[in-house]
Amino acid sequence: MRCDRIWANARLATLAPGLPGLGEVMDGLIACQGGEIVYAGPSADAPRFEAEETVDCGGRWITPGLIDPHTHLIFGGDRAHEFELRLAGASYEEIARAGGGIVSTMKATRQASEDELVASALPRLDALIAEGLTTIEVKSGYGLSLEHELKSLRAARKLGNMRRVTVKATFLGAHALPPEYAGNPDNYIEEVCDRMIPAVAAEGLADAVDAFCEGIGFTADQTRRVFEAAKAHGLPVKLHAEQLSNLHGAALAAQFGALSADHLEHLDAGGVEAMARAGVVATLLPGAYYFVRETKLPPIEALRAARVPIALATDCNPGTSPLTSLLLTMNMGATLFRLTVDECLAGVTREAARALGMLAQTGTLETGKRCDLAIWDIERPAELVYRMGLNPLHARVWSGL
Image 1 (cartoon, rainbow, N blue to C red):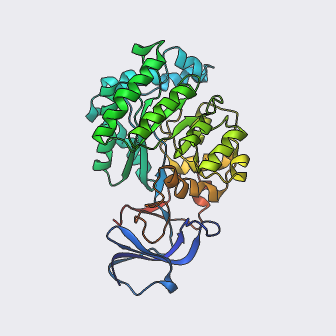
Image 2: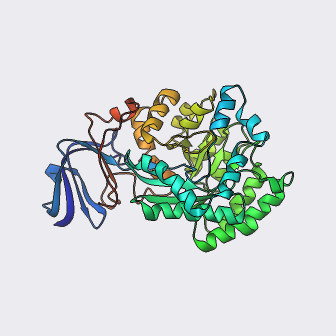
Image 3: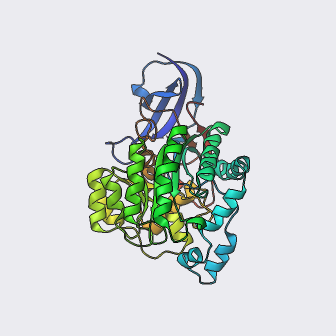
């Protein structure tokens, strides 16, 4: 059997569903043809391959390439000053209501050109790629007008053309209320639904639609309108839900078959049950929890008990999670949320792929999946979660190369 490349003499953490633990294979082999895995498993069971290239991994571990399923990578400026204000005692809500927060980033994003947004995002993307990232979700949401939301989404698409990485773009027009709509949130939601979503869909700029359902964001009724418009244009939905309060956004997301509900610190039992029934992924964001010094934990035990899939993401953004490390995200998930090593690794591979609607294409080492690999200089997978500030990546493979 012919193939392009073989990775031999490796230990595999396949993350394949239905297998115990991480689906470990101690003497493993991966074969790739045309960018797709044609075999991943024990060397002893592999077909006889004729490969153009064989890579001896020297006993290193191979995991699926890492996936970041929630980022706000495209933005102008920074919010270091607000960080100082928070250190002095100001709350996230106080800063937002005083004209800071998302609206301050909106101003910088509107002033930036598309090329400037791309240039500022590339170092953040490169930092993630250097840790084995092969797939990333990038949201808009700092333009808050048709012109600047389209600009942000085009910038996100450009990132995928400039680096060997898969970029999934998400339209987040319902992120905050822009100043020109002050006091008229329903009118802004009408703009999002009637003008922005149709334009985004017509240009094929987004793979999903998101919203911020929160007291400082938008109500459940307004979010429902956004979801209805998204569905009318064939776009799946996801939601920032229950971060600062419980507006029952997760249950609403479940009604629409959302890919994921994210944050979830204030998620209640009804929301957990609704997510479980609908198969909605819980994407947890420990970087934001840490950075804003949150004290209310997401209901991890309830999510486990209901078998809700748990993904982890950096939530990379300028105001509440300026984090560009999935390795540190895993450590935070373990130390702050008490997730297990297996949950953390699944959270940035298999379940992250599920949260993006991509589990059929990536996220595990299985025949038929895209050949996205991270090869590590480690003795056991727990090292990827245990260490802080050390990057043990040996090599990254995207689509077989």
